[in-house]
Image (cartoon, rainbow, N blue to C red; front, side, top):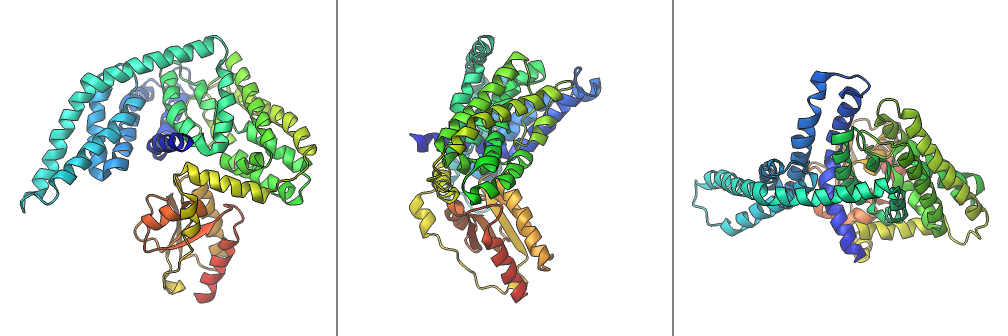
Amino acid sequence: MKDKIQSFGRFLSGMVMPNIGAFIAWGLLTALFIDSGWLPNAQLSSIVGPMLTYVLPILIAYQGGKMVGGARGAVMGAIMTIGVICGTEYTMFMGAMIAGPLAGWVIKKFDKAVEGKIPAGFEMLVNNFSVGILGLLLAILGYYVIGPFMGGVLALLNGGVAVLVNNNILPLVSIFVEPAKVLFLNNAINHGIFTPLGAEQVATAGKSIFYMIETNPGAGTGVLVAYWLFAKDKVTKDSAPGALIVHLLGGIHEIYFPYVLMNPLLLLATIGGSVAAMIFNTAFRLGLAGPPAPGSIIAYLGMAPKGSTLMVLLSVVIAAAVSFVIAAPIIRLSNAKGSLEDSTAQMKEMKAQSKGVAASEVKTVADTLVATDSADIKHIVFACDAGMGSSAMGATVLRKKLTDVGRTDIEVKHASVSEIPAETQIVVTHQDLAGRARKSAPNARIITISNFMSAPEYDKLAEELKIQA
C-alpha cells in the first residue's frame, strides 16, 4: 500500500514540480499587484486571473501529457485541458492532472495502433490530424464530463476545508504531514495536494494557509539546533550546523530526515512544532500568496502578503522553538545507540522505495566508466528525482571542486534523472537513482553518491580530471 501511495504521489508531484517557477511568478504577481498587494496596480493585476485560470493548469496538463505520451501527449493534454477549464467555474488544477495524462495515454495508444501501417509520405498528415481530431474530441469530453465532475469534487473539498478552518482543527493535519514527510511523501503532499488547494484560496482571498503547512522550515530547524547543542555523537553534532544551513536557507528539507530517523521519537518534536505554528497561523488567519519552493525561509518570507511578513516569520520561529523544546530532552536522554550513518542508510532505502527503485536494482548498478580521455570531458550532469533542489546543490558543490583544479571548461548542469541531456558524458546522482540514471543516459559514466554536501566522490572525480587533463 505504501509503495502504491508513494508512486501515485510521485506522479502527481511530477506534473507540478517542473512548473513551480510559473507558480512562483503568479504568486509574486498576486503579492505585488492586487489591490491589497505591496504595489497595487490595476493593469498588472489583470494578469493574475488569466494566469491562474489558463496558464498554470495548461502547464500542468502539458507536463502530465508529456510524462505519458511524450511531446505529442503534451500537446494533447493542453488541448483537452482547455475544454476542462471552460466546463466549470473552478480553477482546474486537479482537472488538468487528469486530462494531461489521459490525453497522453490516448495518443500513445493511437500511435502504437497505427505504427507501421501509415503509407509512405503520409506520416506528417496522419501525425498532425490525429492530434487535432483526437484533441478536439477530448476537449469536448473535458467540457461536458471532466470539467463539471471535477467542479463537483472541488465544491466538496472546499466545503471540507471550510469545516476544518471554521472549527480550528486544520492544525491537526500536521499530525499526518510530518511523518509522511520523513517517508519522502513531502513533494507529493505539497505539490500534489496543497498547491492546487492553495491556488483556490489565493484566487478568492489573495493568500492561502495551505502553502504554510508542509513548507514551514521551523520544525526541522528546531531538531537540527537541538542536535547541534546536545548530540553525544561528535559526527552528528558537527554535521548538524551544515545541515541546518542547507535546510533553513537552501530549503532542502530532506537533509534533516536522517536526524529524525536516528531517533523516531523526534517525530514528536516536528509534529509539535508544526501544529503550534498552524495554530498560530489559523488564529491570525495567515497565508502565503504562492508556494514557497524550495521550502527555504527566504522563499517563505518572499511569498508573505503585504503587512504580514513579521507574522509569517514568527510562525517559523514558533515552529522552531516548540520543536527545539521537545527535541532537546529527547536527544540529551538518548542512549545514542544509532548513528547518523545508520539512519542515512535507512533513509536511502526509504527514498529508493519512494522513487520506485528496488533495493536489488540499487546494489547491482555499479559505477561504470566509459573509456573517454578526461580532457574530452565537457558535460557533467548532477541528477536528482525532480532536477531542482538536491541536484542544484550538488552541481554547485561539484562545479566549485572542478574550478579549484582548473577545469573551468567543464559544464556542470543539474537535471531530472528522467531527463538527462543526450550529450552528457558523466552523470553524478544519488545511489538510489542509479538504475534510472542508467536507463536515461545509457552511454554516460554513472557516479553514485550518498551525501550531497560532502561526498568523497566529488574530490575523487575532480582529482581524476585534473591528473588526466
